[in-house]
Image (cartoon, rainbow, N blue to C red):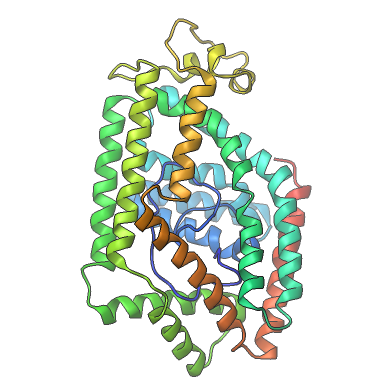
Length: 380
């Protein structure tokens, strides 16, 4: 849940990008970094999404790993899922790209690096935000206060862009033609599933779904809701400005940007149809000292063509920015509208909660803060 305290207006946005990215006016269903009140529910939603995606073999793998991690670690669900997030994200990406043998270990190593960076650089920011949100939850939250709070979190996206741009520039340049085609088919398959759930239904069914998701998220924080509060969530969903056709257009735009970016990087690197070795690409000094250091000691050939580091990373940063803020003015306006409506709706719903519900929210947020502190103290 990324919009203020909850995302009470429901809806579904694009979740079809290549990698988790910082949350800034994005989908309530997008796999995203941990933040604020959504620390537990975000991780849980990632796990649920993974269980909807792959074939039975992958489902069993994900479920068994998560269950065993919980049993053996003795820590909370949040901590266990966080510590196992590199493997979960790896499976998510593999569903889209079908990793080659030479890519698997490299991708896993990069995800571990990202987790280590997130643990030391981002969790302290989230802990501060959780503590602020805990204090805010005691009383009324004006819409402008809630939106300003979320924007502060969203502004951390620049750090994410910088952290992801170097490894993504290397990885995307390595993709084979078959992997690009696999990605296209995955987009098409998931678009059909999305359309079946959100577009090929009646207005009432769509509103029911939005309402149900809003209730689920609100109850995760506040506990059991009254009939009046559930009715209020339904009205908030109805007034949210959610447009399934525009949301589908937003998905398509992000997918097109992703495929276009891959082709640019493959062209810059003169990538053959069979793809390029990741160890060779990451070892090439033109791709940047950061990646060379990460792969020190790897057996790699320096003869493989590679895109100049700065140019390739600039292409990736531009792509990630467009995922966050669409280039198309109409879609950008819709994206902004939805972001603003969620902020306002969160505050409006919070005003309807009882003192007992706010106390429950405070206790839950305090628990999230303890989870964040424990994760920060745990070595990766």
